[in-house]
Image (tube, rainbow, N blue to C red; front, side, top):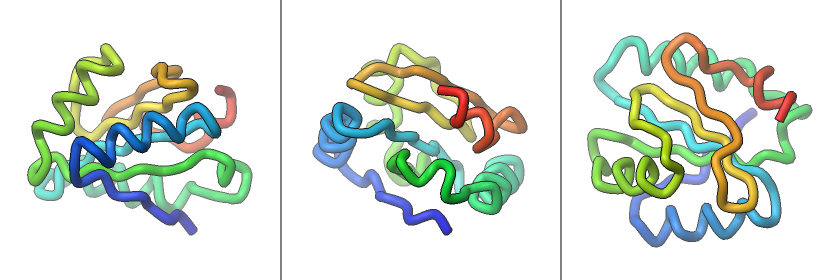
Length: 110
């Protein structure tokens, strides 16, 4: 089961980036009204397992916190998409995927 760390402020985002120097993190950028995003989130949560428990999962509600999403795009130099995952280690984006390309198994290769 996945235990999300919620990003609801720029401070939360800064703390998540700091955590990436201890363990890899993954940020799931989610649009709560988009059927594609809802399906991608459900699939991602079903796929999450003990093999990726070393990665800290973070969740961002794009509709409520768009300025934070914009800051994440700026900091990672990854163009915003929705839904989207971005894997970060040592403060740098290692991997990103969007829409139907979002798969837990891809995180294992990083």
